[in-house]
Amino acid sequence: MNDNVAPFLIPQTHTIRQAMEQLEKTEEKIVFVVDEESRLIGSLTDGDIRRWILSDGDLKAQVLHICNRKSYVVEEGFRTEQVRANMLNGNFGCVPVINPSREIVQLLFWKEMFQGGDAIKAKRRLNLPVVIMAGAKGLGLRLSPVFFPSHLFRWVTGRSSKLLSTNFCPTVSIVFTSRSTTNPRSSNPF
Image (cartoon, rainbow, N blue to C red):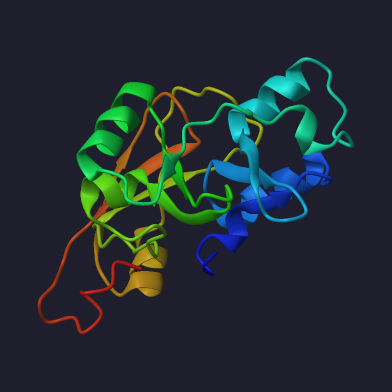
């Protein structure tokens, strides 16, 4: 097993709550339930957990009770095109590659198989000249326009702004910023 696989493995004795915490840490939608010898028992998705909760299931129950024991797996030496086709047909976001002992040696993520990316990409900041602000003051719907203090926006960003404000809801404003080539901060929208 490599280090990229370990965060996605959860022992069969862990609780569903622990599985939810692990799903949150991995930022993916799936973990794999394993036994004491790290052999695959099944998969557990965030959807499995939601369905368990909706059926009034106990969060202290073991993941062994709700995992999918018939999850799609491939063995080492798999054919990439066949795995892609099966991922498309079954709508699988992640497929484990197992060895003859049923230990997971690799995880094939959708992003890797179809977009050529890494399993977990760093989130990049979007450099867009639009800011959407939302907030409520308990006013509900109101028919008067909302005003944004453009001098405050210029103070924060160093750029001029043009406000497009909704005239039906005071809680949402969209600000389009202008880009200035002379402003040294123009490459950073915030």
